[in-house]
Length: 392
View 1 (cartoon, rainbow, N blue to C red):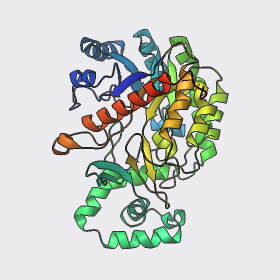
View 2 (view 1 turned 90 degrees about the vertical axis):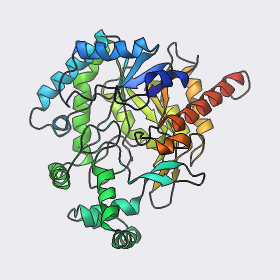
View 3 (view 1 turned 45 degrees about the vertical axis):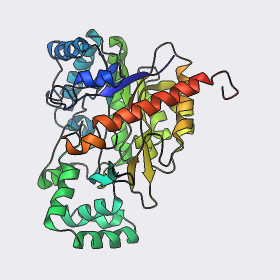
């Protein structure tokens, strides 16, 4: 059985229409009700309205990405218990509407973070980039976070000072907007002062406390998901290490095993994102999937090119610093044990060809993901065609 090929779609305002997604060869849609404020219940009527639009285009709503976890839940403050009840009801409503998989994350304050949305790679296409020097420059000189310099090695501090001194006002504004304005799928945008206040709320929270809050959340929602027939898939931290002093708790195999253990059933699972996990050089992705694949309920497939100082950029899907072919081999082995296909999507993609002149969501241009899906589809087919050989 092959993986289910899916595609992230940001709803009616997405510049890529459903008809084009179908032409790309995907059969499943990954989307969310982004217009519903964080913490509110997704009504059956709203869910069915979106589902009907997708099905009328000849596709199916395979995965919700994401039902956002309210900040009060992460901190266990304010109305967090009410927000958990709302989350539980949303899961019930999604289950009643036949949506089988829900992806979510537990990253505090920021969702995924990059410093450059238009990094030009060797072939002239544009990639997303996380530059540690740029991040440190923003942290120390624009955000002016107290004691920020303690989080960086001396080499990065020196480079960040030089970087900042060579930035003009437009460069600084662009960097700030890239970090704080929110990337596709993020549910929050911040001003500089808003961001400082959000960080201050986590000043006394370490990783163990955040992990405890995450496990409490799972204890509350996973049984509801199980009853509703929904598979949960937690997305790893992106990047998978602390930034701005914020704790991270979904960055390694050990982190995920703690999540599995707290409610040890299939519905409490993982979104295995090869790009997010792959941004840590010490994460061995094939080994990680062999360990964690049993409860992987969703796949994000992409690759990153790592640099020695912690920086990285999004590589072509079959290139970069990790052996994507070997990772997909392990994924196919797991898929062959199952009776239902694991949904996967080509995650991100370079801005290239005609998309360089179009308005696109950063990381979610059509042609770059079309290339990625085609490459992954071909690689998966090649693995299946050799399934009788000794590799299995």
